[in-house]
Image 1 (cartoon, rainbow, N blue to C red):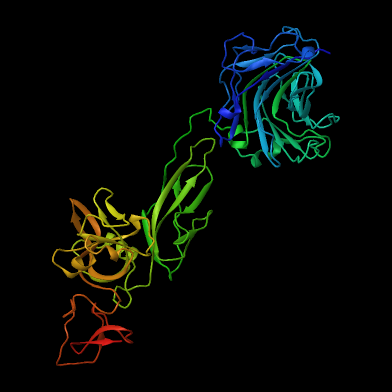
Image 2: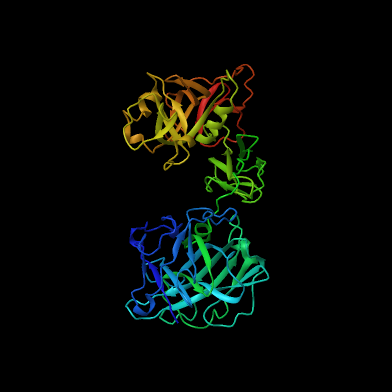
Length: 532
């Protein structure tokens, strides 16, 4: 029996170390040329296998809907008669230079054309191989795929070694190109490879996952028997038949091997949310907002920060975790008609603060109120937070800093001292010749960075470098302990006390009546007093 072994010695080390695609071969060589000597291909050095002529590259395109290797490059023709092969031929290519590790998984996807093949009751066309390292040494072939052709139709089967084939795939017309994917799971810890597993997928849908193609999967006969460890080559086997192969991709993942590239351009869907921003209190009722889309792809929801709010991946239902600001993103998966898409909206989880010194707003609360305040509003309130940055006109938001900042006109407050996202912070405007500016700006007070501070000012917007900034306008007062106010408040805005009535009611410094005062400064009958 005459055999020719044609090997492609690709430099695996030249590939990207972490790349999942281990081999991509589209046979982009001169038409009608021998594959030997091109792109690293060579005939086996074994003298008994060095006869006959090389398989040739032919100017043929093999197509398969939505497969990345479809109609790319040329094809490799294995023709017994024209290439002077009277019995069998194996054409091998290494897909790795390293010994596969235990539980490594490999997928080999390729296109096959049998339109010029005669009838056969079953011949091998593909396998994984352990190639001998020296001249005269043999090979070990495992995961052997066979084709059967009769009455103008073809079907496929797989066996691990030499088991008798009993089960065949569904028949398809012989003239139709086939996409075959052979999965190799290395379970070997030694040289026997008795536990190695092989699977064949016949004409899978590239737009679907491996799991969703389970209906076209066949398990190799004999997966629990026979050896075959250290398989580093894929091999096109030619046993008394003529066939052409193209679009070969070997990878460690299904998605990389059976790469989905739509044959028909996909439509970009319209995916939006009705409300760009929503807010609800942590103690309030959970809410949700469904995405609006014309895509038929699967929809999933994700939270930008699960420490603030979690979201049900399927329904989009929100659950508050902590006060703060984050984004919710809905993603639509790629489908046969639509490309992938996404849309996001902002979520504010509000604290139970009421803007008083005793129960101040969080910075994210205050920011939301400023962004939604009516124009001309004069409402003022207290906020408590940590100094983490300053307003920056280039980023058009708070810039997180680690040292002196170069500006004295603002500070940025975060809900926490380790806040790292400027858009989650509150800009506080510091006015010249005021105590808050003198005592809190980071240029003159670098030790205030990361310090907790209470600040009182207007809820709304101001202009900085020609930009509208939503935040705390004109910081009037501050406190470092939530009790002592700088400068000391001598009157309360919007509160008029009738000394004649002296009704005994107690008010906080924001003018709100307090039934049971805690530690802090209050007003009763027009006079201030302190609860320690």
